[in-house]
Length: 242
Ligand SMILES: Nc1ncnc2c1ncn2[C@@H]1O[C@H](COP(=O)(O)OP(=O)(O)OP(=O)(O)O)[C@@H](O)[C@H]1O
Image (cartoon, rainbow, N blue to C red; front, side, top):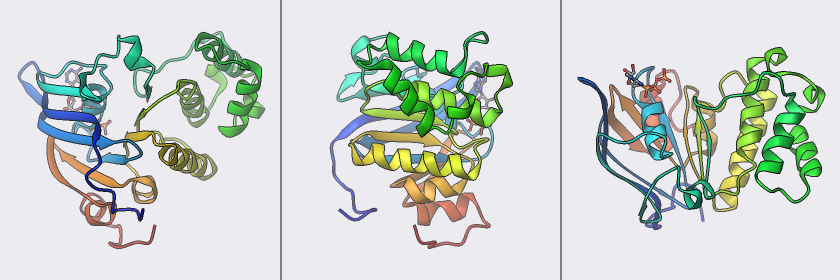
């Protein structure tokens, strides 16, 4: 099916009138969001517009002030192992162990998740994320882009129906960004639903089916990347080829 024509598929993830207040401050006004299997939605907007707040709620890592978050029709609770088995998240709560190397981090998550051939999985993850040269490095000797690649590799150990990423392209060089775009396209082709926040239009333009523009916690616009991105990034030429 042609990109942009994906309509009327049942929702895997459904947010209904979801809001989040911090004390007297409204980080996110009531918002609806639907995401189907194999569909990709990108969130864009200025710093503080509510993207990470929305992602945390969609991942079950935070509780909405109002509204509901459902995965396949059931309330989403990240502490539920059945939910964790369907969800992979790369976000601002991701962290590393300072005394474990890159390889050891990957081996740890592989063994923890019962990967059948953990050493093979680790080698493939190192190669796929461009980390092979840094396999024996400790986190504090990695660049921020390499660290981002490690967090992504660790998250991808989970079998998943839904992949949520907060600014996954930040600090990545062009080669790593291309590997990320290829990865997301492969995930979508496998039927995984992808929701991510970004400050760069390229990834949204090349990968997303739909873009949501947030401003001060309000959904300002949503639609095809070519329609919404020029509003969010005024320097971007409308109608760029994907
Ligand atoms: N734990 C918190 N306590 C109080 N206020 C918060 C908290 N988390 C977020 N906020 C506020 O909610 C608003 C939305 O923040 P959020 O992190 O969702 O924005 P964002 O769009 O992801 O920004 P950025 O692009 O800088 O990552 C901001 O005004 C922020 O200060």
